[in-house]
Length: 126
Image 1 (cartoon, one colour):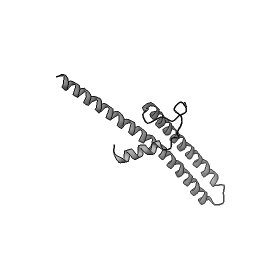
Image 2 (cartoon, rainbow, N blue to C red):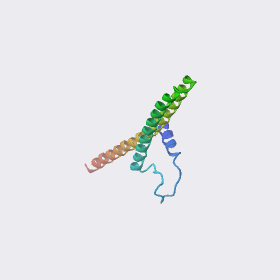
Image 3 (cartoon, rainbow, N blue to C red):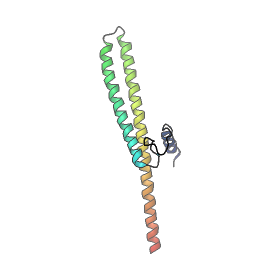
Image 4 (cartoon, helix red, strand yellow):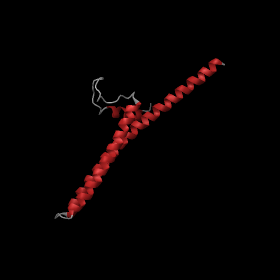
């Protein structure tokens, strides 16, 4: 495993709280690809929600800014809040993509291992 990929994967596991194994709300383990796909999908959905809310709040704030005395300052603050929301969404999407990349890498390794085993078995039978 390449070092950056290992660091990304380790970072993904850090924010997950520890829970007992019999707890139905326990976070998925790294060995459960179905649960990890669900986590990635949840992160992607959360990112979309954050982006949507940030855009709606930005539009509303822009309209409200024209009612204030310091219009430019208000617009700048609204734009900064919008950028912060987009950055948060981008971070969530990045985590989702990292999970999906790791799952894809595992699938490739598993396929290569199976292919090598089949090839070795065919070589031994001949």
